[in-house]
Length: 134
Image 1 (cartoon, rainbow, N blue to C red):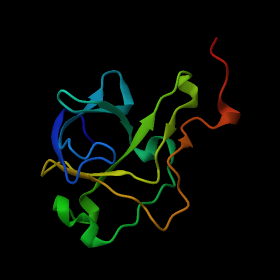
Image 2 (image 1 turned 90 degrees about the vertical axis):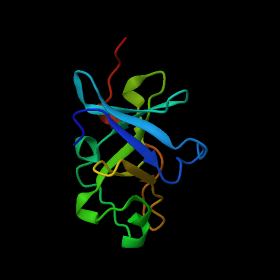
Image 3 (image 1 turned 180 degrees about the horizontal axis):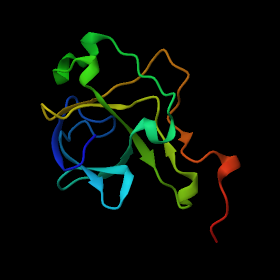
Image 4 (image 1 turned 90 degrees about the horizontal axis):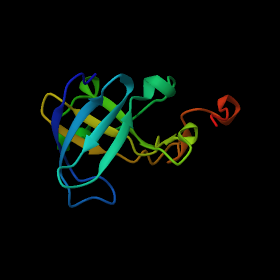
């Protein structure tokens, strides 16, 4: 798990941001469950690791899908893009298109899990666990 900043090259670019390939992945201070993915002079994304919110999450990919980031399956770090709306308790994670990261090589790729029941919006905090915070 990333404990310090890592420079990443996204191969190919994130969906919707294909023209941006250089990012910095770093932990968010004092919050071990979240990370930032920062593009210099570009957007910043919030990421989390599936184990923190979705312990049963399973990513099944074919070996050739990892070739562009020079990665063997057992070396992969998986991150999920998080969307934080106005009410943070309604934050969601994209389980359909995780980021697969090879921190040793500084390479990452976003994969779409075509044969899955996952969607782009899974609550981090299920509605029955959400409470009003004022």
